[in-house]
Length: 144
Image 1 (cartoon, rainbow, N blue to C red):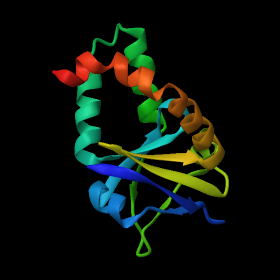
Image 2 (tube, one colour):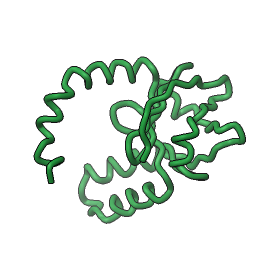
Image 3 (cartoon, rainbow, N blue to C red):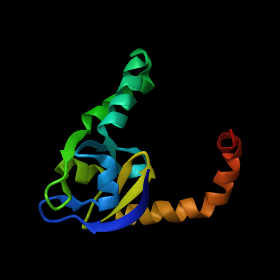
Image 4 (tube, rainbow, N blue to C red):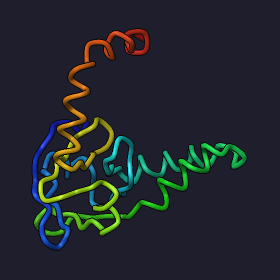
């Protein structure tokens, strides 16, 4: 399970240290792609392949499915860690997620998210405001 939040700096060569606890959960090779809410997401190869297989099973006549699948696939890159536990992010990924120097690396149960610090702080503040209401609205789903 991938959990916790960590702050690390993006270096001048677009490399980002991923904390050991999250590194161990991602494995040697994984996929990073554009994700929801303005962040990037890193998925284990197994999780990525499962997601892509499910997307491929949706009829191509569904416009939403085409859009979602294209966005994920076109913005994906296979990654691995260097000897210092860093990943290399492409320029378009940095632009997509509006990453600056300080990044937040978030364990999100089955994947890792990479956020620009200011975007994360804004998101977290809004999420904190509605946390109890959201929890209540999910009661039925969580009880089963």
